[in-house]
Amino acid sequence: MGLLRRIGDLITGKATRAVEEAEGNDIDAVYRAAVTEARNELEEAEDLLRQAGGVLYGLQQKKKDQDAEMKQLDLDITEAMKQQNVQIGGILIQSKDKLTAEITQTEADLITAQAELQSVSQIVQEQETEVQNLVREQETAKNAVKTDSILTNIQNRKKNLGIHGNEGLTNVRAKVQQAKANTATMNNLHASSTQGQLEQLRKNASTSSSEDRFRQMMSGETK
Image (cartoon, rainbow, N blue to C red):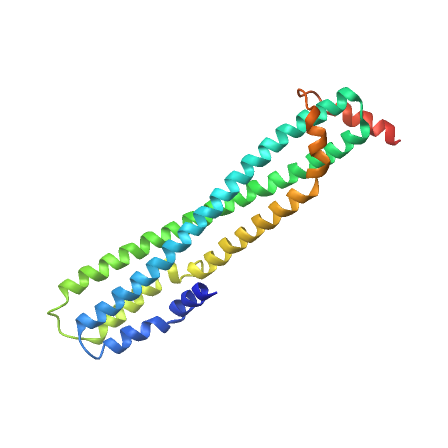
């Protein structure tokens, strides 16, 4: 919460007070304060970039695990077919259907996470450029006559940066944190749902075959 509050303070303008107070002294002080503020915002964006990368990596690993589990389920279903065990086959096919839906959701989450990572990466690049621009302007403006337009130009340019836009740092951070929470919740639910039922079955896994015939067999028994 401390980090979110700091980001909120930045975007609502609390951090710009240092710049406004410095305006009354000299141009160099205005730029020093603006550079400090921009660097702080850059650190916040870089931290979020690391978190967004972690979310994407976690989802990639989750998809990898789900693919491996799907392959194992196919083997389990084949073994149940060979044994003509409709009861166990039913459990396995239900598990496969559920896992198929989870994989579809993970694939959608991956697309979202990749887009969010790209968005944060763009914010970081913009903020790095802004810091470089401010440092360069600070050097060239040391001998300039002090005017209110210097601070106004800095503030107007700042409003156009992605870090303060509608899809700025706070909104993207909220999405990343929600994605992290959703991934953890889904992992916990999935780990506890069918694991006990499947472990015993996987000891006898064989090779893959057609599961459609087995679904038809199950359908015939339930009629």
